[in-house]
Image (cartoon, rainbow, N blue to C red; front, side, top):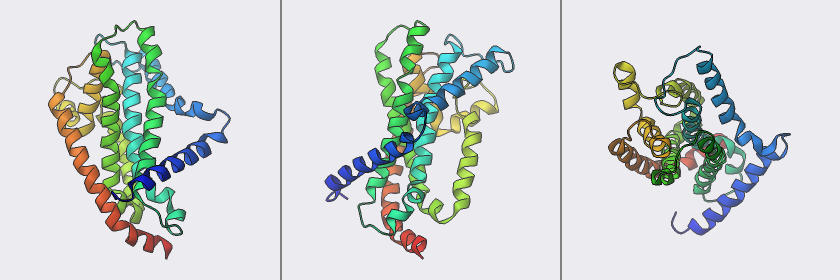
Length: 259
């Protein structure tokens, strides 16, 4: 892996450019699709809260800003997890025909997640001006929080790649679980103060990433520094383990998908 790193990095960059251009070049709205899902999700929940269909208290933080920042972080987590989990399926035809460093697939998926998150996060700036949020130095840590969230999602997705590539049921179960996970993560509402909902959210590894990152940017909930650090450390360990597992399992996966 160390020996192939220069070639892996260059190949990953070329694959990233190819896939990104192919994804958005043939659509009418083009790169606007990078922003549209997060904006649409924000508008839906703002409408529901404004129409009193749901009653969500975001404290001193304006609810649209609260939801949009949560959606940016969910885009980072969900997109990176699904992207890492799907690297074998997306490269199925190439893997069976071309010999290349497979780490480039991981870097490509990470780059795509970073692009999608950054393209959405840049529109947080107009929201900050719109709601007159004063600048503070902790805002500069928000990109670090997004990066940690992408790292966590990539690590979790990479761990299940060898199994998801062989058993499609696992991938479908994870996609279904993410739909429920959306409501067990403080995306559209803050962590409850007590009760079983509080316990479930605390057990969610993404909760500390969301709460701490959003606190750095707009305040509100107190940051969870200890849990944040533990999740980042565990993500690095899982990511390393996932890369090794992928290297070991890929020859067997390629043999099976080529049969």
